[in-house]
Image (tube, rainbow, N blue to C red; front, side, top):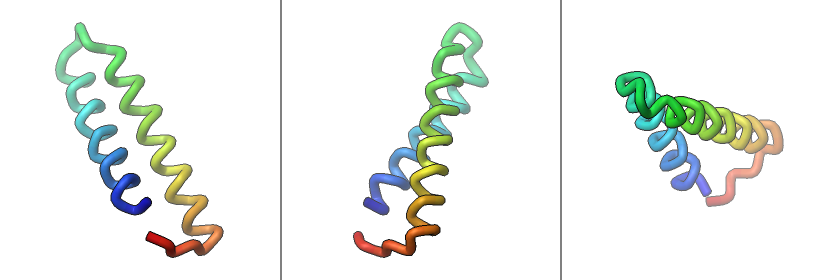
Length: 54
């Protein structure tokens, strides 16, 4: 689960950069933001619940 969270965060950052640099692919910016928000929510839930399972 931890590796999945890291992969989602990396993909979100790459999509954010791609969406920011290429104006014709503006939808990637929104996809990156959504993935980053999802990764942040999953991280917060894991920290609050205290589950440390891999």
